Length: 343
Image (cartoon, rainbow, N blue to C red; front, side, top):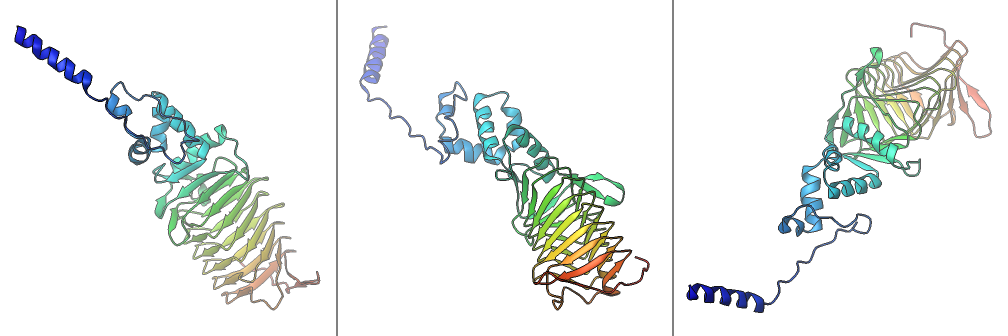
């Protein structure tokens, strides 16, 4: 018994004289100032000693998408704090944060409700390279379209040659919607459908191609500005606009090899074409058609080869429709009216 007692005494003595263990240095992430210090995750000390960067970049990012994080935030203080940090960043990445663009657009509604989103500070949905299939709502001749359900949102890809959306977008009644640097192919309908008065959409460096119907349709009083975009090889029109107060501004855009007209304006819609890189060619019917008091204003000299090489006619205006070049001195040069045909 004495031997055992001495053994315990020596053990206690040696542990009391040993130098204290050095505290592990915890690496702080670059965003530590914005993201609050991690609270205790577990009663196990080794769990709490895992460095901050490891938790964020090796555990949270690879294994938790934003939907899972929004669920876990209810059961742990740290996850809740991290969720709040993610919300403040106002960025949703596909597929890193959300596996599909449908889920990203649904989550964007949550972000818009909890953040102070403006035109200057929009929600950003960043879509990675490759093809991204969208599951939309089937809607008659519109085809399968996915609803953009919030204002002040930017959907941006890695370039129209790198990021492809397989489906179409529907925007109705939302403002400051931007779609940038991606390609859109909707095998069941339209690439982009904008409708309802007050709707405002900017499209930049995108390609709407090989859709079943139109590349882009604008109606119901919506306003769309497209810059450096292509509308090509669609089964219907490249760009279709109709209804009073509907406005489309096409800057340095091309509309070619579409199954019907390159650009068509109907029923009092107004379309402005700008930029010397504008080109409307090789469409199977008309290049430009203005019908029923619609107006197509070409802000280029009449000598500019804006519409050429289309199968039936390069420019056609019926029923009071107007196609005119706006000259530098403010005068207009109109084309002659082409008689009504089957359009």
